[in-house]
Amino acid sequence: MATLPTQKGYLLVVEDVPDILTLLVATLKFKGYRVATATNGVEALEIIQKERPALIITDILMPKMDGFSLVHRLRLDPATRNIPVIFLSATYVAPEDKEFAHTIGVTRFIEKPVDMERFFPEIDNLLAGEAQETRPLDELQFYEGYKKRLEAKLRHKNTQIARDQHLFETLDEGQRQAFKTSMQNAIRERDEIQALLNEIREKIATLSKD
Image (tube, rainbow, N blue to C red):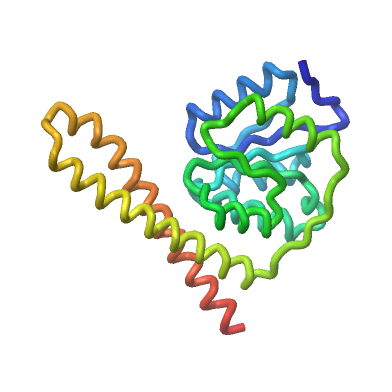
């Protein structure tokens, strides 16, 4: 069983879906790691200010501050620039998403559902390895790249929702009830992406004026 030495610090898990967070934390603690949790990037930064983690494991799509923004903030600060970060995602899994993640300084990218046989060796390797220097993107570069990823994800979500709505009309009443939850989740994610995209466009407009 792997045990994280005290001097190595703790693992910070950032995830807004309660079931996934509970599973990750329980599994990591069973393996002997000391674990702290946050449900978004804002909470994560508050925890990191108090004690620097040895490793951060984070989802991407989260409220208040998502994984992309969290990593960008970490890489801008010399005190947190070299903390290894593992992205876990079921939404941002296109090759362009992974490329952007590595560009902003993400250390590893693992798709959900998480393959634990791959997951734990990645953690052990990162904890055992030397910290790698990462160079942050400037603000405008980051937000321009971020905007492209959000626009692509929004197009994908809108296509998915339109397809689901068409399928919904073909179902009988019993099937519709079960299908409705999936549609509602997709619409919620679409709205979160749209709201975030609006914020990013405003930031780009402000930075372009400076």
